[in-house]
Amino acid sequence: MSLQKVLGKTMQLDDRKSSGEKTDRLRRSIDSATTIPNREVDDLCEAFVMRVITINFITCAVKACKASASSFPLHFQDVEVEQQEVHFEPAFIQNLLPRIDWTGLRTTAIELGFPTVPDIKPNNDTLDEPMLRDLHRLLLETQVVEGKLVCGNCGHEYSIKDGIANFLLPDHLGSSPSLET
Ligand SMILES: [Zn+2]
Image 1 (cartoon, rainbow, N blue to C red):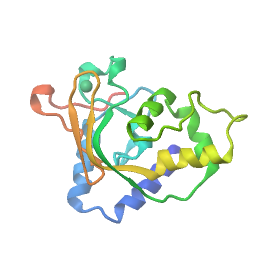
Image 2 (image 1 turned 30 degrees about the vertical axis):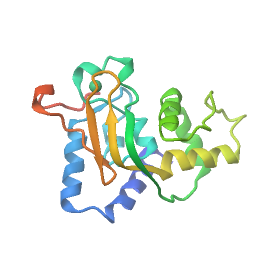
Image 3 (image 1 turned 135 degrees about the vertical axis):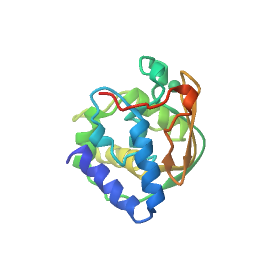
Image 4 (image 1 turned 120 degrees about the vertical axis):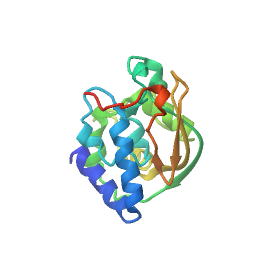
């Protein structure tokens, strides 16, 4: 299964509670975000519901931060976390693993109070079902509903409300930010 498909699923889940305004806000957020190279913009569409998987695919929208290693991952602060049940598909998690930035995931996991992520990314030999279930719970079922994301480079804070992060930048930080690939 593709990343797009799971994010599609995510979108279905979120559609149920999306108002027009919320969808609008989400699209504007997507328009202004900067992505990590090699991650397709389309894949990220509607992905800004703050699941742990999402944070592994985005970085600060401030242009000057793009080249800085300290801008990834964005750091969660003052968060309220919810678990939302998602159907467990071990093959999906397995296929997703190569695209995960493991160091970034570990940082995020510790910030959210999941201390059990192994030091080294598991491979097909070391990956067992309990670990797949742990990763499923962390990546797909853990959602940040309130709080903020803070850039480790420029210190900019992105607020998260109703599970959606706002990536619009104030004018003085550079208008018309765009998605660059
Ligand atoms: Zn930044």
